Amino acid sequence: MVGTAIVAQAEPDGHTLLVTTSAFVTAPAIQTSLPFDSREAFAPVANVGHVSYVLVTNGESGFDTLEDFIAQSKDAPKFAATAGLGTTTHFAIEKFIADSGADVDVVHFKGGGPAVVSILSKETDIYGSSISSAGENLKTGKVKALAVLGTERIDALPDVPSTAELGFPDLEIKQWVGMFAPAGTDPAIVAKINADVNEALQNPEFVATVTPLDWTLFQSTPEGFAQQVDEELTKWKALAVSQGISK
Image (tube, rainbow, N blue to C red; front, side, top):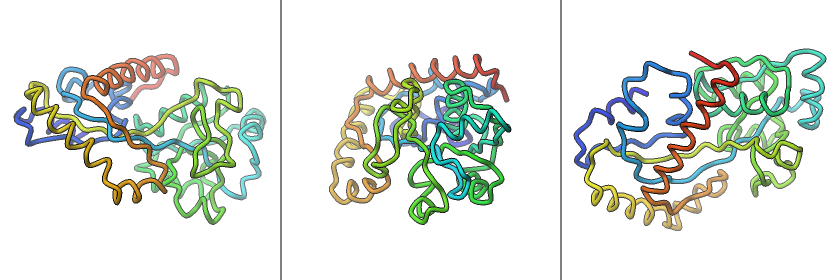
């Protein structure tokens, strides 16, 4: 949020840019005192791509499926980790709770690393993690994936069902990375930077590096990204209101 505020106040000359995650659209849903207006202070440039979220638990938790976890949460409340209040991982868990009816208490940590550690130590029971964040712990079995938050399975975890398969068609959330310029930046500059980003995303070496981490790369337009941002700001604000989430 500190970096975002700096870019919001920067000269709109194309020399100061913001690269951030989808926390750009989730944080404003619960933080009413941000020093910028997410809709008015920025010119969306490009959506670089996204990674899927996976609901994970400790490898020895005893939850073999997401259905097991939901059922057992009704018998004894469980704890869900997030990477922090207002983060995309927070909203992933809140959406899961809203759609599944699971009895889960949310615990906020200071980043994805500590959240994963809480799963490893059995301090918490479930976490909405990216493949890169869960990392080697998934490969070694210390962490177990219960479901992919989305409509389809992913290549990195072909045996893990999607939440749509499990009866939750609207339970989809992804962490994207996007680039923004300050509002008022010349549209010609925005278009040029967008073209440069799209070209970089086709670099074979870069593609080979991020593909194993479950990254899906985009060829976006500023207009298309602006529409996505606007829609998601509305969507996550509505979820925050319905779930009574506040700072």
